Image 1 (cartoon, one colour):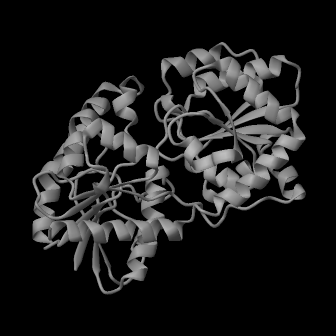
Image 2: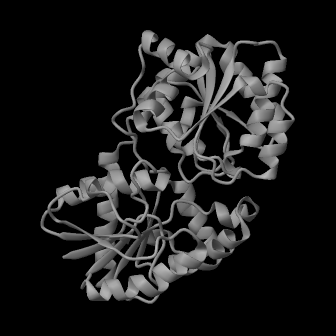
Length: 378
């Protein structure tokens, strides 16, 4: 079988959540299935490290998809012709974007529908594209996969897709993540916050990550008297909006906030493993990979009681209302000041994280793909 795959998010040194999902699952799938030929479709010159096995061929379709207008050109015009020319028997799209003008059997992975519930978080061109196209993608796909039961039910309610056409494929945790020794934790503090203990927040800086309220909550926590604690924010600025700018400028303790930008996995592991706790108060997540990574490292998690996060973390997180700054402050304070609570959360987290592996994710995604093929013959 010739299986075409949308691999436009396999970008060297720029893998984000969906990119990591694609990288980790596809690397395992192609190696496990040498009987099939995989055609990886890139939108720019690619790194050959992403051609994981001899049964993978890389094909570039121009132009690079850097804007919704280019999304339309790539998926509506370039991709259908490429699928026909390459004689693709099936198409897999790890980011959910599809060729609506192609009849090739398709599995689309839709990670979440934040743009449907919080359109104000996105620039107009992007939200209009997502809200216009993704309902069509969901209906066009032969089968769908998503990364949590919460997202599955959201797709059912929002787009009217039958639940039995959607499979749950949980994200995994990279093998690099593990608990740090006390000496390694001390080294991480020296590296990232000049030796001070810190809370860490991980994720690209866009509005749904709730950075504005986290900054306000940290400011209140600092006002309460812990003059040593720092806040480390890890991630690329995606859409730094007015709310974040206003919160940042209104802080009394800005000097205690450190921005690292994007980190590679080794440095991300050190930044996470050395933290007093992960502060992950995003108000909308399809899964929330940093939560699972923190649990694997034995790092306590403060999480929003919202969307998929309770499903992922269970009893391994201390929860707060993501829309209430006082409640975020409360949850942070309780974890920072209660060593027994931190120990319990870390211990439960390590145990719970064992269910989130990339081997399992790859197996589940391939199972969904096989179900998709069966659906085409009904």
